[in-house]
Length: 86
Length: 226
Image (cartoon, rainbow over all chains, first blue to last red; front, side, top):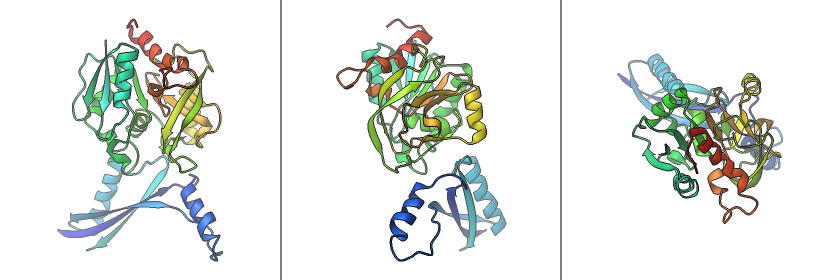
């Protein structure tokens, strides 16, 4: 068994408004000198530590947890699962 | 005839709800801790407002996995009236007992103010004493109250008459100004505004009679004389 660090990023699906991201873009970043930025999306990240036999199993186990326990709401959100070896 | 008020860690409108059910409407009411089951002789269940589990992860999602939700689900299937208010509504959508999701308000602010609802469905156990399109002055108090459903679900809601309450004007960016919905059978109703804060004239500066009909509807449904 090996230990893996897994980053789960929960973000809105395309088309779901993100007023916090819009505010950071329009009222902070674009009011400064950073005019090349065109989009900011907020997201929530959960960092899991898990012991599994390999990276692929760690990935599928965390995805299963996210789906079964509604870690994200599939109507409005999507998750990205990134696995890193410890 | 007994009404159950479910208490989660972080519920904070449970006592207000209990007070209104017992002292104002004289219903036999009992608290039920979320880790325990519901007895079979319950005639209605209320999931009160608050901040179950401190809104961690997402409002209502952790409470939606509480053991008592299995019993709430069974009762929903049997047609027993179930009302979720504010966080209770969030728990009902996160448990899949009601469609949709409640997102952060468009303003990103916690909104605590008086608003007006319009009754869009007067056939539910909590709205049967209203005239269609009757107006209810009522307070809201939430940060995640912006109702959202995808287009297909919205079509189903309209087709099945599942939109129970709408705000009379745009309040928080809710899709179609929706403030409350019901399940397909109509016995499970969720609403963001707080009727338990609006039924007594001492604390309602506008008119306490309309919101009282939410509870009078329940009494009519479960057959208890006031």
